[in-house]
Length: 212
Length: 278
Ligand code: SF4
Ligand code: SF4
Image 1 (cartoon, chains in turn green, red):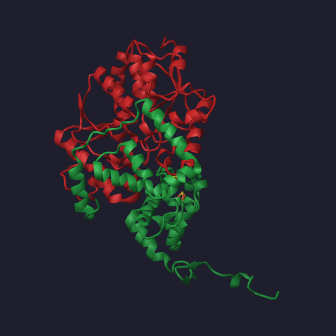
Image 2: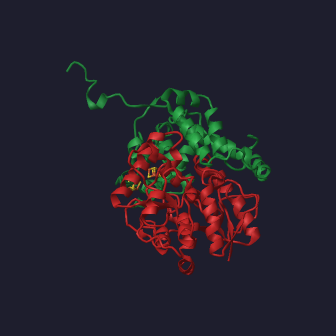
Image 3: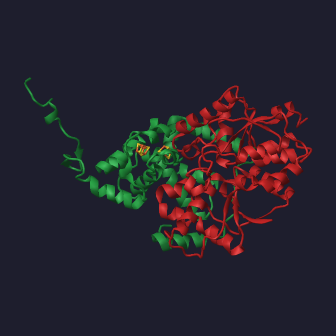
């Protein structure tokens, strides 16, 4: 062989944050400890039996399967996780956590990663889902309760959403659905205002600073 | 008997037929529901996805209001039940700092669990004048009501039975199936429709294979999800009933087609077949 590039020893290693990733646990321990502390679940107890992934109804839509999420954390591969579709696709249906023989709360782990991603500068892989959650929270802060009609309208006004819906043709479908919902009396166009708004806004100000 | 009632946002909009049937059934059962004055949204999936701390705090406002009234809470929405229970568990573990006073000394009932108590089932039985004999149904619980068991307190999370027992009391023939608590994907429907549709379709398929003529649910999101999608599946006509609608059907004469006008899949053919509707 002319080049020994193909030998296992010299195979290029994945890049991570600019530095070459060499050994397990270099970044791992720190991130693992952080995750164990913040999710209060013993992530190091996992023995990769894959029961979580088998129980998960949407694992085939995920780029990192649930048992691999746990492994990634053990190895300290944080960026991959925060960039994954997994954390947004996860439905929080709790199948994985309920059936894990070692009581690893994977649903909580995914949820925590989603929280971390939402507060990081990493662009969410499933931005439509992230934007939807964001819109929901904005509506909650504004009105105290959610009205489906208002929520969907606000969501459609977010950058890129409507354009994408027109492109994929889902907008037409959505308008038809909206019309039949309205005819059936399922849409409330003029929602009742909750007197709770002020309290909710104060709460946000108190807990999270001025967002609204 | 008196309980505080947390309806949740869906019951003001998409599921206002559910709200109506609940009011009717509880009136018939002589249980007073006092709607929590000025209740606010529990935060649902969005709150815990983006901000775990707020998702423990937001529902607590309603817990505080209910404690002030000195009443236990009952809620018909699976998601609300899950979030209220989560908040209560965090409060009990002293993990949240709240601007309100919550001692944690109250019970949060999922509505099916509340009505499936022996004494209340007996009461229901006494009210049934038109049993749904001949109606083959499967009960669908969804994910948020039963899991995770350490939050929801369902010890029978593998095979929940509250809806089964209620439907049986109303006279329906309840079939056993293994999709009782498989997630229907409602929370992802807006952003990733194809995932939601694949999950929902599978549940409907399994219900048909089991031989059911209708599905009985208690979660407003599951109902609209399972109901609306049937427009897209030719040949499928599986009415999705709220369990309170089933009770209402068995408690009263004169249910007309109009009562179910908010349903996408018209239940009239099935009900006519078993002689409960002209
Ligand atoms: S079920 Fe639990 S132990 Fe098994 S692979 Fe998943 S996290 Fe690990
Ligand atoms: S909670 Fe998420 S990862 Fe776990 S089974 Fe459900 S969808 Fe899969």
